[in-house]
Picture (cartoon, rainbow, N blue to C red):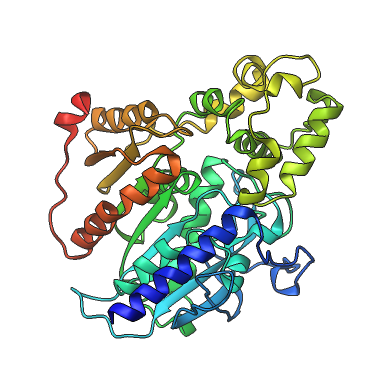
Length: 409
């Protein structure tokens, strides 16, 4: 057993190294019939449009194949205006029997930043072992949970990926759980316990799902929502991203928000900006980061002012940013907010403010700070606590809020 575990960890280390250099077997960006939106969509949100067997590799060398029931799905959801859309994703069910309390739970896993191009969709990257959140998804599977992993709007499917659009991301997560419950081949309970987890972009999607669930999906037996590094205040996040290693994320957010609201970004960018952003938009996260690293947005705009000023002062963009603010709606289930005090992408103060805002609304909130170095380290540091917290929710244990301690954390 020790040798087998060591071998797996060794292979995973090689895979991470390959990923870090960008030498990935990224899935083809060409259109796949599976992802095409049919002329007519089913009647209800969460209804399955089509499904097919899929595969889950943990590494880009394809040496570690996860032994689980893996299904790629296309399901109905709605965009921010309420218009029906098709969203793709993956449902993964352990082959082993569930020995926990009650029925097997489903975790709606909201993925972090993947990119904007169709070939960046988690449902595609899982099949070739390039999904960087694969080890964390595996952590859910090994605990016996079924996982519904959404691709979000336009990531794999028709149209643009509406990155950072709060409402549509929350819808996609909640409807992925509904889809899993309605997929006979998944073998999961149709009305069993569910939870949501996500980090970074996924943290925002999970938080949005927590706020929207009571009105959008009240039938779900939601036990709790775990979220990490929630981008609850996009203005504060944008100021941190501009000119940083993660400048590509500012490009993603600007284009994703513009796409969700039908805004043409071309008039706001100079020739260099158009070239840089077009390059970033076509790349997945690990490739996009070095392409835009440390660039100042003021060198990319038509008026020479930072994009942060555009987002803060232009009435059109200011309204868009304001509508993405998380914290205005009280979650009706317990929530866990994990955040590193050393986060270099989403300031810890943003997570703490979200916790305080929800606490003021008498929500059941647990703020869990950590000292994981950087945004990536914060994710790794948060997972043991998130796993334990979710396990307690599914076991029916009371969720202990620490709102009283938030001002001191």
